[in-house]
Image (cartoon, rainbow, N blue to C red; front, top):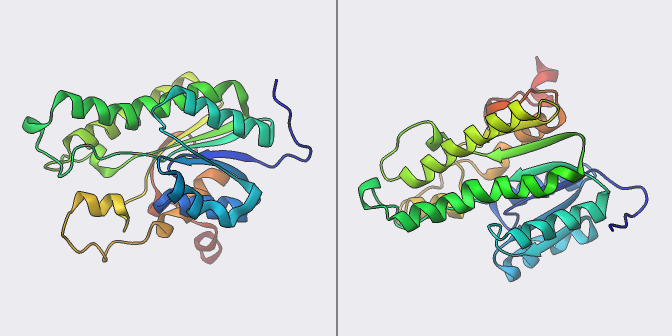
Length: 241
């Protein structure tokens, strides 16, 4: 049985919250009064990144592909808020580095990428679903690599295409949910640097550039579908218009 504090805030689970887009999104949700449950593999990095938020962020280190860890995140969110308003499947992996061509991608590498990028998001949603609020929002962080065919992005791109279709099927099966597959665009992150070893990626936008569009999607009435975060009008842009 779950016991729930009184005056419960809106509650979100955001995976991969120790850096990059996940951490920027957590900051914005906390600023808006949310309680956020997040995770990352490295406990020290996660603790260092989230300590500043105090008790409004529950940080739990672990492997998002582990069903027991998924359940731990769900239990923490239910304890904090009684129900779950938002799930953001942000944690992801590129797979083998440097990224190989498809002909040189091993079966195990492909399976490992699918485990993190496709199976884990579905597993977390399955475990969270019994505790969803009346109008839950599910965000699956996608990529243009799921639409375009880029050399050496095969395993990652195929997994994001699968995640996009997973989102479509969930939306068709649950019309009362808003299932949003979101392409955040190129970002200046450690993961993006891993994809381009030795290259200068400082010309890419910071992850914070993608957050306003994601927040507009969360807070608005956009229907289930696939969106590019930086193409979504924000409140400031709407006011100017």
